[in-house]
Amino acid sequence: MRVKRYVVDTMPDALGQIRNELGKEAVILNTKEFRSGGFLGLFSKRKIEVIAAVDESKRRLDQQAPAEQMTAKPAIPKYNPYRAQSQASHREAEQAQKPPVSSPAPSAVATLEPIEGLQQPVDRTTDQTMSRAEKPPDTAKGSAKDESESADSLLQEMQHMKGMLAKLSREMHRSSAAELSGWDAVHDRLKEQEFDDEWLQHLYEGYEAHLQEHSLESNEQEARAWVRGHLLQFLIQADVKEVQNDTKVVQFVGPTGVGKTTTIAKLAAEQSLKHQRQVGLITADTYRIAAVEQLKTYATILNVPLEVVFSPQEVRKAFEELKDCDVIFMDTAGRNYRNELFVSELNSLLHAHRPSETYLVLSLTTKFKDMKAIADNFAKFHIDRLLLTKMDETDTYGSVFNLLRAYPLSLSYMTNGQNVPDDIIPFNPVQIVDLVMGDDSYE
Figure 1 (cartoon, rainbow, N blue to C red):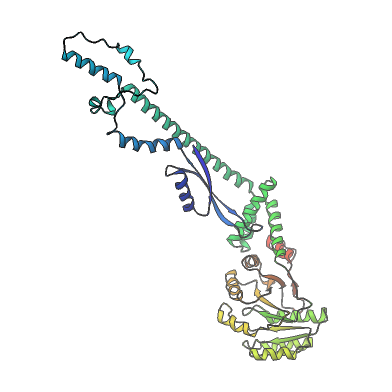
Figure 2: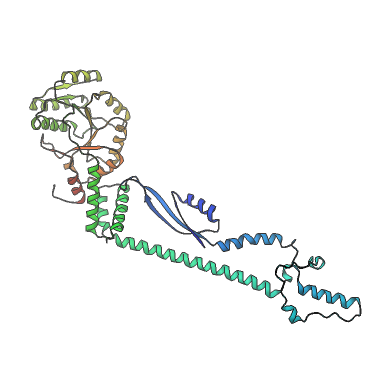
């Protein structure tokens, strides 16, 4: 028996390889899906392991059988001492009254065997009427019986092996389920936090590999600790940065109602009061009623200059007016940025001067599907940072991980209230992971 393992992307690929290498008589004994490649478990690809086997001896018998059937009729049988002796005696008795020629006794003839390596003469006259059925019955039946018993034995052996492999596979699955006891509670928590299916599968496979690598038994405490550490490591790798000291221009883009204007006021106050930097404000949000008045109020309170622009030409003029400022914050109009046309219009307003940063502002109360649609359109333009608002208005944070897994965005700030300038903090990976896992210390 020949057993071979294949690792393929799809089952049709496996079937093609098995048919080419093992033949159509091959039997698939087991299949298993797993994920391979990627970095830290990310971007791994689904693979299929297929174990197949073929009975080589049975396949040779099957291949020889058609050839024997094709040559059975025209083939000239080998010299048969039994039949030749019988025919010679019959002819001698009819032709003459001579004394019968002595012939070996039947018992002696029965013990005759062809001499190895000696070609026997062929009696074509008599052999033309011979058939396979006229061979010595004991020899033909014995050979067929041996072949049949051999094939049956091999078939039973294959069936026994297939049963053992199936049993082993079932035991492995039961063992895996037992080892991952306690995972269900963690899975349910992450599902409540709106982690997508790709994340859940990635975490499950990573945790399973962790248990096998360190020979650990699974329980809820172990599962929670591993997931917490993995999520924290993921956020740290996402590159968390605040407004840099050498940044000249900070531009804010995003859909309607996410709190861009209030966020600008908070950051302007922080830079002015905490870092003692000269701040200037620009607003291009002339679509929303009282938007300009709102930012003027903040500018007056902070005692910083404000410029209002209506076109790309006026943007350049506004930057010229505020050239003496250490940092300039620019507000843009909230539009339906799922529409690519609006994103293109906005991009024409953004200042190309560097050093500058563009922040995509999204609300944590927005569905991930909508976040993804907005990010898809903005991905065509330059986005430096992701800023998340309304943290205090939601209890689910899985969308943060879903978004960062789909797009290579860096993190900056989170807002957790309406108070200016207090309710804004640098993005805190530990806080987000604790909230995801159900720690109430931040509420």
